[in-house]
Length: 323
Image (tube, rainbow, N blue to C red):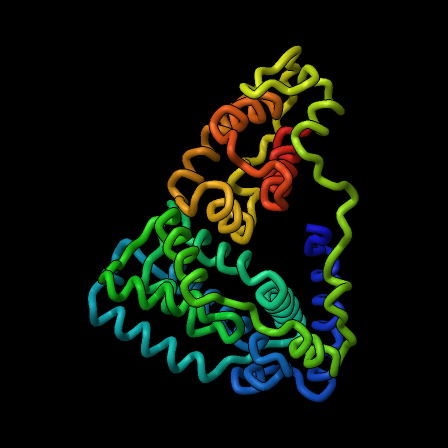
């Protein structure tokens, strides 16, 4: 792929937009209420993400009041806390200093959902720890989603049909992958949201991407540059004069976007997410890029080494095992 998302560009735009919108609102008022938040930004998703974060803060604060002397798990106490939350949600009051960072984060999250929805899905599926996602958590997440929500809605329907209260991360990714293929999901039009943001502060979608500085080389070119393989490459991909490289300490799986996970699974690993996951773990344990290339050559000789998907996979491996 020729371009990649620029986190820096998104953050800079979000900061500038939040400052301008906050200045505009707080020029007339000292505090903002929940009702005012819901109508603050033309892009409604921003408002919903602010409310979601306020509810998350509420959850964190309720954890602080728990005590070893009182039972907060009884149904009566839980019901009372829910009622308290409902009442409190109708009395939101936030000053500019506290509100602007929430607004900036919501804008950034919204732009990412618009431009890279697959990565947003990944964050939702992976953000609850221990490799599991609760169906009820997904249901709550969907209450705050307005843009590109169809795939996760379908995922929830599937989980409800299976009567699953808990699902592993691998199962969630695999199931969502099949859903995306079944419904032929196409992300919503970027320009309509760019136009809505631009009413306050001009936004060009192309400004959110940056050109890649390097192009991906097929294995043979990479091998020739590094001197890792003899010429010509043998069919068994035996290596010569291998010099192990210093591996990047970050995990390979963590460096992949959900879009890449879906793409690599579908094109390179025959649509089997479990096989993909297992191979990633094996690759992670290898000492160098040279060893990885030899392993893949032996395991998957039928791969199209000229395909875009393979070249992107190779680029990911280069980064992971770079010196």
